[in-house]
Image (cartoon, rainbow, N blue to C red; front, top):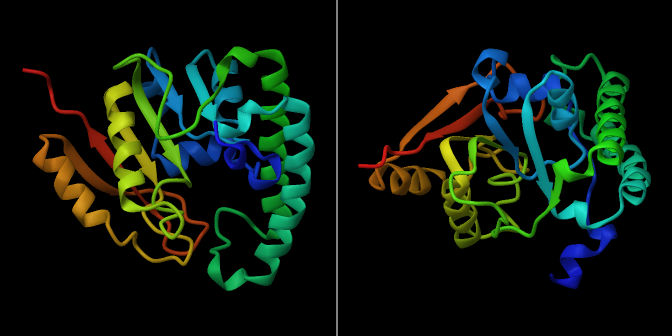
Length: 233
């Protein structure tokens, strides 16, 4: 593990709610039932926690989970405060439709953090520390993999090779499908190598679809990539 990767100060521990995930990934409860699902990277999202309560089988993984849950919860509270200040200063970059205002946003983020922290304490085995692009899972271990606000988002910091390596590893551990959201970087522009990645995946025989979703907070972040793995011959 690299020391930089594990430095708690370098990790932003913020997450989305279960309801946001359902909208971001255009998910229905029916298509999740009986499936093994991986949230990668999951951060402080409450998707795993609430899914568990609904009898769904979800595993979360993130580099943050190398740190103790209590330290992460404390870090999350500070990160939330800083994030809300940043959103307040740059409101034009966001669409206040799903959220009424910054206060409403803060309440959603706090709920996600609290639900995640409580579940990490109660079900630590569901929260697996990982250092991408490598994953400690069996091939085709998960039916569905969800990946939010990581790939493409940090296109300025993570190069194309890293993106390809992560997607290749997600394909290895996925049995059926991968969904990635959003398809833009932090500036609100479509990820510069997206079309090349889509072509490469299609050339490998996978089905790739860009799907508009019923969720937009960061301006222009309203589509996801759905990759259906090619059937084995």
